[in-house]
Amino acid sequence: MDDKIFEGQVALVTGAGSGIGRATAELLSKQGASVACADINLEGTHETVAQIQSAGGQALAIECNISNSEEASESVETCVRELGQLNVLANVAGVLAMEHAHLTQDEVWNRILGVNLNGTFFTSRAAIPHLLKSKQSAIVNVASLAGIIGQAYCAAYCASKAGVVSLTRVMALEYIKQGLRVNCVCPGAVSTPLIANFSPPENADIDLIKRLSLVPKSTEPEEVAQTISYLASPTAKSINGIAMPLDYGVHAG
Ligand SMILES: NC(=O)c1ccc[n+]([C@@H]2O[C@H](COP(=O)([O-])OP(=O)(O)OC[C@H]3O[C@@H](n4cnc5c(N)ncnc54)[C@H](O)[C@@H]3O)[C@@H](O)[C@H]2O)c1
Image 1: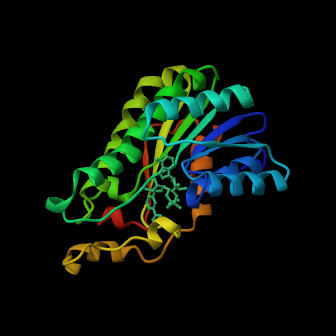
Image 2: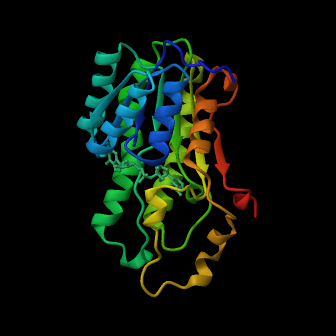
């Protein structure tokens, strides 16, 4: 792909303070975009912005809890006010917890659905009117393999990510005539702090989570970022509404 495919464009990346979001913000910047980096973790976001700026790119840090609809809207408005427009939205921020379904507390259920599904919706809803001002624009959501297959002890996470896959398809259909494409990526396991903190609950039946060990190795965040960039780019102009697994084929079994 052309090195500077996003020259003159503005991208908003949530979860940009770490992992896949950071890799995505850095890549889109290298590819010419000005990048608004939104995250609840301002310190991590400042590190990402500093990295982008030291490489000669333009970036802006925005502290935002995407599970709060007002904060999600404000992050979009800040991006447009400071950087002038919005062409690409990468909804990357997410949280994970494992628990037996019947022991999952309201707080855990609401937090996971609140960030992963509500946050993706709130940010997209605020961004769409701005994205529709471009002839071509894109949303790329980070769902998960867990949004395509069931995973024991991940009721809230799987439900949230399946919701993201569904939201992707709905928005893809709704806005394609106006030039906005919406896709999602579904990684299996990516080497980030999120997976490093991933552990089964007490008394888990390890047989039930064997399928996860079929993912032969972790994907690097940079590879997920490359896929997000591709789906957001004009090269993928006929790709809309897909949930692309990055899982070495585990979803196929
Ligand atoms: N790492 C994996 O194996 C894996 C696999 C499949 C999908 N994913 C998804 O990839 C996405 C990125 O995760 P990652 O692996 O880079 O993890 P990460 O923990 O490195 O990054 C997640 C980022 O989201 C931010 N965040 C959390 N809650 C937020 C909130 N309420 N508002 C704004 N920002 C918030 C965190 O501060 C963090 O910077 C997530 O949606 C995750 O579900 C990860």
